[in-house]
Length: 143
Image 1 (cartoon, rainbow, N blue to C red):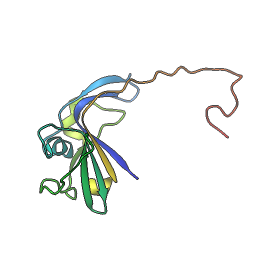
Image 2: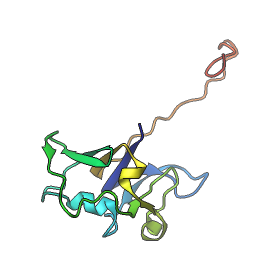
Image 3: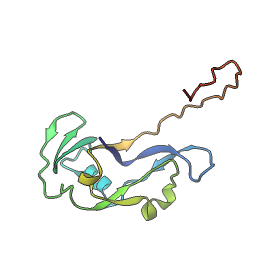
Image 4: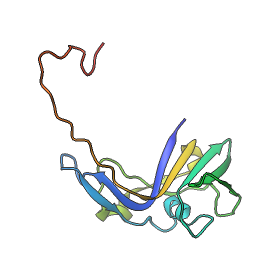
């Protein structure tokens, strides 16, 4: 099962180039006409989080109250191709509108899509490297 994630706006933890220090970054509102913008405006005025389940070409949407809603609107054709925002480990909000959108047919790309309307950056774990000669040879990897 392939689960995708999407957001309209918020914050993320990322770096603006390889080797840079991670930082909390703002994610600007999604580009008009993208899947992220469409899901933000879909079905209601409250811009709730949504879970979209794709099952053999049919889809159903659940919002954050886990109530199934009608997904037959003509604007909800998940077979069409639209841009979907792509945010990875390296992300630079300055270039958001130029290169962070991938042509996507949601129903072909995912089994489930989780749409979080407004994300909140995670707090990264800062792990200390422990050099201890008494640790087992297989720690943390190996057989």
